[in-house]
Image (tube, rainbow, N blue to C red; front, side, top):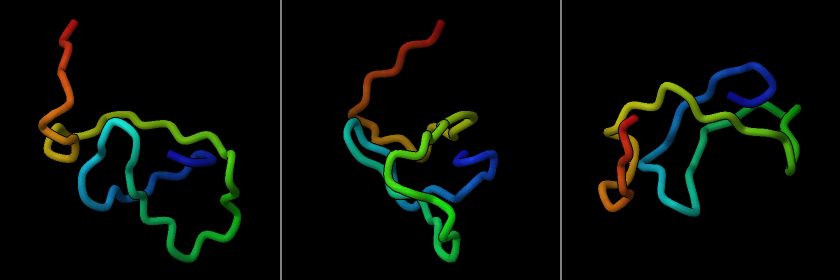
Length: 53
């Protein structure tokens, strides 16, 4: 979520990177807060350790 709007994840999320499709949204700038919530485990790199609480 960026500025209250949800966007699609492209590929898998890694420890230091991720690709979010913001095509056509020119209101987003470098430094804007990105909130990752309710992400399916299939989008997260399998090498990242999981902790379930």
